[in-house]
Length: 154
Image (cartoon, rainbow, N blue to C red; front, top):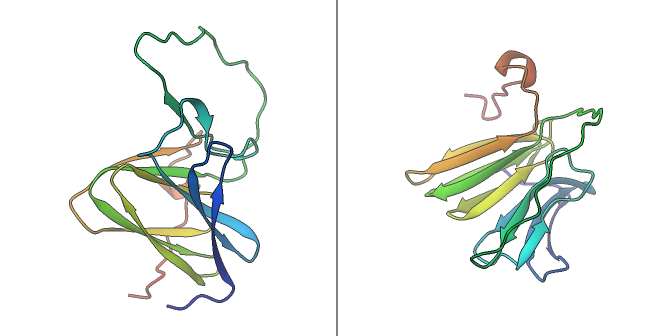
């Protein structure tokens, strides 16, 4: 599988963390974050306009975060975006356009996460793994919310 016009970039955010973005034809498909080097305080890894929001916390013992609740707003989501966090093991995420064009294969190890913004994604379990999946809702069930694709034609 070979990709045309594939560009994978490493971006350094404000807190000097490496974020690997998978970009194809000038569109962001996925981001990979290594959680071994979390910055002090609250730090959001995603842009404010992403449907799924992912942030990290790193505080010393005794810190009390301000009590709060989240305000109610009408929000529209046009796509499901998902976060896959590898708690144990190793997986590979294969990325494709919705037309089936191969983009990249990315190995995701323990304490790393990948965010899927768009396109087709396929996971291969390389080692025995424990994975946490988080996505925006509401979820309409497997028949309505996703389309399964036989990308390998088997």
